Every structure is written in structure tokens, then in C-alpha cells.
Length: 373
Length: 266
Image 1 (cartoon, helix red, strand yellow):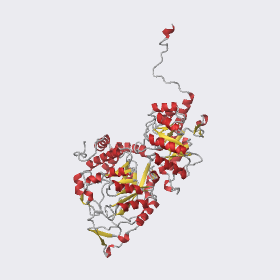
Image 2 (tube, chains in turn brown, yellow):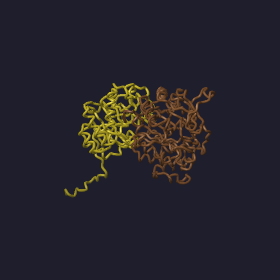
Image 3 (tube, helix red, strand yellow):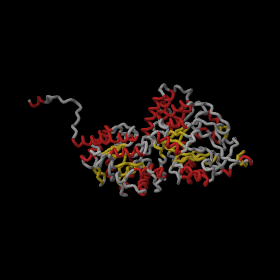
Image 4 (cartoon, chains in turn red, blue):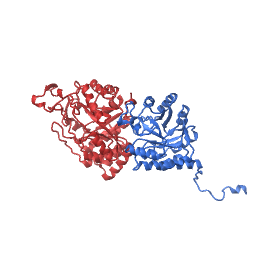
């Protein structure tokens, strides 16, 4: 594959496909970006219409047993932690529903004791009444555990591989169950087998050579489209933002390359959903609205309790698995620590206004629980 | 605008008569206003609405109430089950749609594959059978498969809706040869659905003798959806007029002016 150092697929269990070749040709070939953008816009309109689906993340817990160099929730970080109880989850959910959202993403750190599968299933049950569509983004689970979440009413699974580069993956995930690369890689297929209908794949841009990472992501998308032919596949390529712990992205990707990647994915995989979070700045998000992105979040908070302030009374630090009370002076104005800094802080309403001004209809509800009940 | 449709004969689906042979989908539009303008310009009497975009709880959720934007006195709202992957799901949705106050008319779409949205013939037949028995008027979206069309007719489908090409592809009547057989054999209306990208595609389907066409993407994503809706309407009307007027058979070779077999009479 020209333009890509080495063979990014050599150590991955994905077959080559025409779509992956197309992606690489568009991404690294001589075509002008402006031409790609034109084609990408046409494909987006044809397949998704002049619309944008909106969703919001709800962070359940920032407890985590993993140590990952780039993540604010990493267990070594002396951050303020909390796991929301079910009433608190419902308060946060109600707030988001009142903002207009009908598509919810439940997010949590990995902590089998604080955040067990039974708890996750309960949070789904608490929120499906408010949201026609609920997805989860948590540590990879076994098929039977995924079934429990699906039975509770969740419809979407988001599980980013973070990095497809085994060496970088091993280096970044210092300790904890997340070190198991292959278990994570197999998660989306297990989720599909368990009955999730929307499956989100992704790579964190900034951990390893992004050219290789993007080709690997393309191969994963292509693979899942064959294996999980009944599911809607979405993809994302969030660029790392500074997080607690002081991590700085190692391999920067320019805005120009980022836009090119969105266009290339759109053309190579015309029917794949492309997700763009509030990690990216407003100007770039606005520019990408028509070029391939089909799903956006808005007004996001990336800490548990971030929307309504619930859970504040139980903030603590976690040291070697034990809760440690905050010092007296630490309580003033304290909130749970966020996973990453949001860059685009506009509310759902503000984003909707921008979408409409660009001739795009914001779509809040595009799914109903009744389909799968 | 006065309609040329008035000069053409009406047609029936089930026991209901319609003048317009043009059905419109309501997805993918840049705004509600653009959708409404397109509906108006299309002259359509039947519009489809995806149930996944509608609030089925009866709470009239303002974030998901496409129905309030469509005047039920002007248009027959045809709920479509897009998103359903099996007969069981489609049947449940159809019942919920009625419970939510929608007419007992269903555009039956069962596509397990969310990429090309190709219809599942087995599940579609099963669901049609169940829903017809429950008194629904069923318009199933199907592959251009003449045998499947007859099987659906036998279990009581009100129409058959073969695809011209995959949904959203704008590729026109790629399944022409099969649709010709369906039109020849069918005792229920044949409505060409999906893939029609230009007014000339709609005209082509109508010239072939299709009873109607359904369009969505090509209109919704046009720079001027209302103008495109009008263009399609004219395409549908022109095609129908051509069909009714009796198109001459097409000739593949030039006809010799002197008969080639004249010597037999000499």
C-alpha cells in the first residue's frame, strides 16, 4: 500500500478488501482534497440525506482499574472520582432529554467492582424510557454480558480499539485488563452476536503512526460489515486531546489530513456512519458537517455528574483500590474530573441553529425501542 | 397549479381511489419546510413516513413528531417499517403505528442489511400474510422478483413495490427486465420504488406500464427539492400519458422499404 509505512494489516485478523484499497488510494494518493470533499458531500447526501443525527454522552463513572497513558481516568491519576447511583443517572438523563436529545451514549471507566455488568444493565433500564435509542461505551465484555445489556434495552455498542498498532498499544496500556489487545479487538463481533444493531468502531489518533492506524480502522470497518452484515457500522477517529495526567499526543495529525480522512472514509464506505465528537473545535466541526459526518454530539460533559452536579457529595480519590476522602480544602467547587477537555462547547440548541443555517435538518430520533422489544 | 393528472384516469389501491400516481417519501430533507414544499409541488396523495422517526409512545414528542408536519386531510400517511429486520418486528411496529393513531396502511419494509437496505423476501411474505389477516392494507417493498410478487398477491398484498435500484442509489430502473414481467403478470398495482434518480427514470417506469412510482432521495437532496418534486411529477404524468396513448413498439433494426420476402408473392 503506497503512502503507508510497512503493512498495517500484517498482524491483524482482517482480510484485504477493495474498500480498504480504495480508502488508501484516496487518503494517500494524488487526488486533490477539494475534489474528494465534493465527492464526499455527494455520497453523504445520497446515503444520509441533508440531515445530522445528534447524540449525547452520559458518563456513569470515572473509576478505572486500568492505567493508560493518554486517559484522564487512568488509575494512577489522583483525580476526583465518583460512580453515579441509578437516581443520579436518571437525573443526568432527564437533563439531556430536556435538551432535546433522544439518542444517549452511556460511558464508563472499567471497574468490575464499582461498575459491574449488572449496574450497567440497570442504567440502561433506567434510561430507555427517556431515550428511544441507548448505546454503551464501556470495557469489552463477554457475549453473555453483552446479551444482558441488550436485553436491558440498549441498541448500540461503541468500542474503539484505541490503537491497532500492537507495540504502541502495549506501551500505552501500562497495566490492567485493557492490556489485552485481542480481547478488545474481538469485542465488536461479540457485541454483534449478542444483538447490538449499531456498532461503533474507532481509533484514537495520536498514539501511533496515524497512516497505519487509519488503514487498520478501514480494514476493521470492512471486516465488521461482512461479519456483522445486519448491523449499522459507525466509525470515529477522535484526535487525542490533553487529559489529566499531562499526556501530550505523540503523533499529530493536521486538520487538513483529518478532513481528508473523513472524506476518504465517506467515499470508500458510503453507508458507514461517521461520528464527530466535541473534541474537535467548532470551526472544524462546522466545516465537516456536510463532508461525511453523520452523527454529532453537543454540549457534552465528560465527567460523571457533569450536567447536573449530582454525585458531588461522594467525590473521593481512589488509591490502590481504596476510597480516600478528599482533603477539607479540596471540596470548594469540586466536580468529578473529566476524561478529556471538550473543545466545542456549544449547546445542542446552538449546534442545531448552525446545522439549519447550513441546510441540514437536525435529527434527534432515528430509532425506536419498539423495533427490538 | 392545475394538474394534468385530472385528465388521466384514477387508479385504486385496495378499495381507495387516487388520482396521483406519484408517491413521496419524507426522509432526508434539509428542513420540514423543504419537505412540505416538495409534497405540495409533487401533487402526491400518498406520503410515506418512517416509524423510526415518529414518536410511538403517544406522548407526541416534539423532537420526533414528523406527523404534525403532514396534513392528514391532504395526504394519506403510509407508515413505513424501515429499520425492522424481521416479520415479527415489522408486525409489532405496524400494530404500534395504528395504536398511535396512524391509518391501517403500511409500507412494509424489512431490510436486515442496513447498508444497501435490500428487502428480505422471506420475512416480507410472512409479515404480509399476518398483517393482511389483521385487516391492514399492505404495500410491500420487494426485490424485482416476479414470483415473489405473485406470492404476495396471493396472500393479499394491496400492491407490490419492486425496487428499480438500491435505495438512495439514483441509478434508475436497473431491474427493468424483471419489472416488465411483474407488470405483465400482476393483478395488483406495481409501484416502482427506490433508486429512481431523475424525472426521466420515473417517466421510464411509467412508460413501461407501472401503476405508480415512489421517490424520496432524489428529491430530498436536490438543491431545490420543490422544483425537483414538480419535475418528477411531470415525468410521472408524461410517462403515464405515453403508456396510455400506446407507445409504438421499438425496432432494433431498420425496416427495409421493399419487403425482403416479396419474392414469395411473385
